[in-house]
Amino acid sequence: MYYLNRLRGTHSWWAKIIAIFLGLVFGFATWNPYIGVAVAVGYLAGESMGWGQWIGGIITREIKIEGEGKNNGIQWITSKFYNEGEYEYNVLALGIRGFYWWFLTFAPLMFIVNPIIVLSLAILLGVAFPLSVIIATEKLGDYSAWELAEHYYGGAQDVGIIILLAWIVFL
Image (tube, rainbow, N blue to C red; front, side):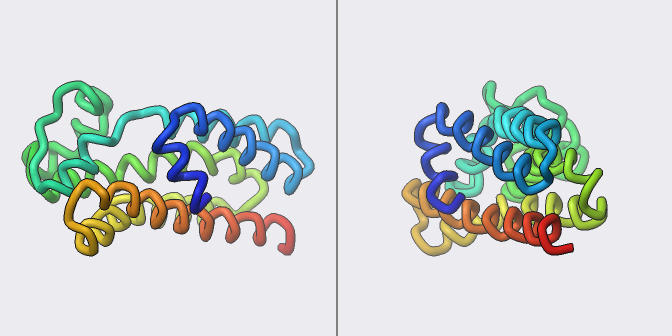
């Protein structure tokens, strides 16, 4: 996922390829094609929502939500804690967004893997989403940080997927 996440960010059709890949991986790992299909659909459902405004807000430390992400529930939840446009608002919104993405992807695995493990990994990947942007921004400080953040977040996804696969195969 280290490189695949960058490709997904560059060309949206890669999201469909990654979803099929994850579906096949988890379908074969569990020997259950229904779980494979559910993982693929969960990935696409979670990946499909916008988050670019929040990444841009972390990088530039300002944001104006105009369309992407405006009325999706995440904005509503985040606005209960911070005012729209604040740096912390962007970080929290992106964290919730990351949790949402990976919870939908990993939820079908709760029938096979301990649900606490699945939920913990979704939370960790949720935290890793804004953290990858923050670290990349500290390193580069401009919009090239976006690309670096996609690599960092892809690495975090690799760790989460490997943990789940190891749990399925070896336990």
